[in-house]
Image (cartoon, rainbow, N blue to C red):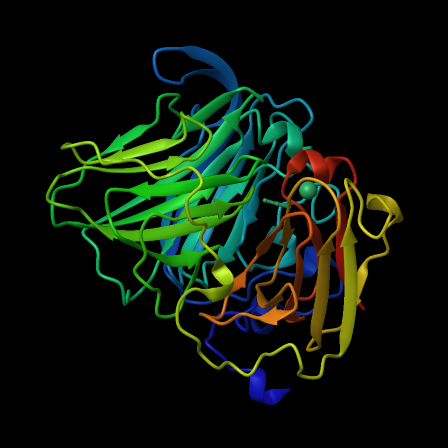
Length: 424
Ligand code: C2O
Ligand code: CU
């Protein structure tokens, strides 16, 4: 498959080549390099947070939820020293969507032990792919993430083909199972923007529920999904974008002369960003058009198609809370070998939607409901399946280690929709 080895530069830059020898996850670390360093210190602790005129208990990184926004440059060596002050069952950080060595993946009980109160752990990885990412505890994640142990990680591109005047990241969150928050606020967030300015808005759904986000008052482009740029993104209007748990969508728009744009969830009042100050735009029809990643943007041939030859093919049938009729410990890992190309067919026959997330790799979405994607190639770390959906995805096993594949409705994951991808 040498001909696939170099496509688009997106999937095939796992940390494989930089990984130093060794067969257990703990030995997988970044080779030293002269990359510039971005270093951070984060402390996990319980505190009260102001969610906008109201104070509630939360588990936080550095006293806020979401925690500090970490912004780094593509290619940086990112070093994060995590301290646990008082999270009793221990804490870790998983760098959601980042392709990094297994030892830095932050999965308690798999790639490291949880960090106990009074202890610390230093994460280190190269931020290879620019894009919108986030971080969250992966120790009892369904509890710890919803209590507030989350934050944003933005990897700015070295050179951006997109032009914009302002770059904002927006976290959509459900705190303590009841407070819907936008950037930590219960009444939505307001961000400065002036007529004529180009705005990049990085929408991150840290909740477990799908959010249909609409953009009212401006034409827009969806420029990236799960941190990976889409090719030749069309300019669209009045469409609801389905953002599954853990997923990220970046939109780019030009502020209208009327001065105001609303970006908001179809059903959750509090999940709302107001850009600029001006005349409130007309809102979208709730039954209006829905954005479809399968037919958006411009095709680009990268040589990876559903009918190429794969080294292994797997099928995962998603149930209510199971995969192939089994739950976590009973589900056999997907075995892969370094260098192999793997195809996975995901089928969702019955129940609520499942945003299926893969650690340590980017995959390509090949087909949706039996048809090849007709727009931009889509490289992602997750795919959102509604009842009845079937997707084929492909990835190259280029990052040896122990990796999770699970539903990012974290309640579903905790109830059994989690499995491993293991290297032989
Ligand atoms: Cu955000 Cu195991 O995932
Ligand atoms: Cu699920």
